[in-house]
Amino acid sequence: MSKKLQNVKAVQQMLDGSHKFQTKKTVGFSDVEKTAKDNERHLIGDVWEDVDIATGITYIIEQRDGFRIRKPKNSEIFQEIREELRAFTNCRKETCTCTGKHPIDQKMRKIHGMCFDCTIEMEHELKKEGKYQDYEQQKIRENALAWLASAERDVVMLKEAYTQASQFVSSGNGDVETWTQKMTPEEFEETVQKQFDTFKENFLTNLNKETKNEND
Image (cartoon, rainbow, N blue to C red; front, side, top):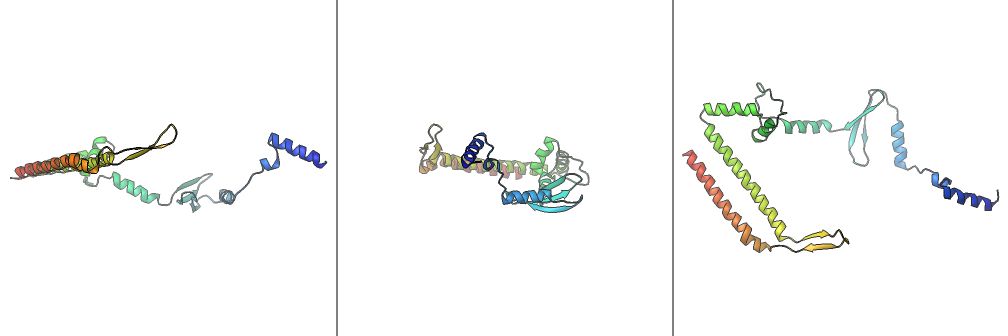
């Protein structure tokens, strides 16, 4: 075949997408390595480690009959942490029969570290011992202080929102627009912060006064 005809044929192949340079598959090192691992033969019961290059996570691979099980190497540790976070650590293990699935049990776990039934039993014993009133006042105080701490965090967020200039990208043309601050830090201190500090002082004074009256 003449060189001219070869060129015509090559052009025609390029037009219909069948030229060898268009259909040739390029195999990189990672493809070769992956193919080698995929084709690696293991016996049923074999266990080995494999590292995910993209994430750096080490996996434990176990060969089963016709398939493989793959799990993170430290999955047992993660499972122990999850179980510990879900545990009712203050329940009486010798008598507690709680499964922990009921929402009210989860609510009591966050407050007391025990299920609802164990909480009721604990409070009943405190009442018999004459200690329930002190316990109740302590819980009220803890809840009040937790609320005050949350309010303080809200004030910090307000300060950031009102005293710092903010920027955003306009959806129309992509330009960056800047919104000026609503208040200067000094203005915020003289208004919001000052009022909150006064409220906090009165709040703690009244809380301590009520606690003292209950203890007298």
